[in-house]
Image (tube, rainbow over all chains, first blue to last red; front, side):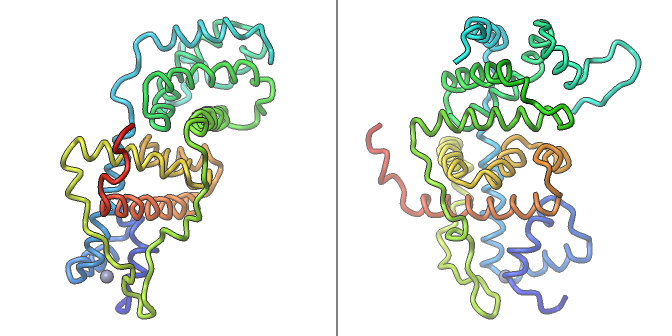
Length: 82
Length: 211
Ligand SMILES: [Zn+2]
């Protein structure tokens, strides 16, 4: 494990680091590399920011009448097969 | 996720509802709408980014359910089938507004030199800019468009994991893929979105002068 490159960290290990499934020993190595390698650290930061940004795509609220409007819509169309 | 309680006045399972809908019981369809309208709306909203379109996509999705439920194979998991119906509905509506262009994901993966160090010319770090809520939402909208350009195998995984925050086991089951396959697709999809976000953050505000 001594000769792990940035490529391996970024392409193979990053996803396990992020979801917490990386074994402790490997995790320590990973963190050590991040401290010593500014390009990888920048990469990690922006990778994490990507995940955070995506969470904003969820709507803040569901329209209160939605279930009713869906049912009304389906009932109005259901007879007409197209 | 609901567990499948055995006795008690438990909630009917998805399969129970499907069978009852197939046999023409209206109230079973109502229960299905009750159970899933929020999820369908939420994913439609993420794809379409506006409430009116999301509502229409939700209506269309349930109409498709009503009409096509006869074709659902009961040996499969209902939600994985239905989720795809919903996602396809949302994306086809989105495509009417913006033509689809499937991108070669490889073009956006990081590059390395022969000794394994990062070789991509590093773009300015945009991560800090998401602390500004308005910028973050703008970037999220663009990220949603970038995801829409991905091949479905990648699109669905990143959508379920990063946007909907489903668990890996639920996603693997829904998409009927292994967890290693899921993680590999998720990772590549994120690398792609990361790169595209970095690129637009570098060249700000040249487009969108007028809507
Ligand atoms: Zn490195």
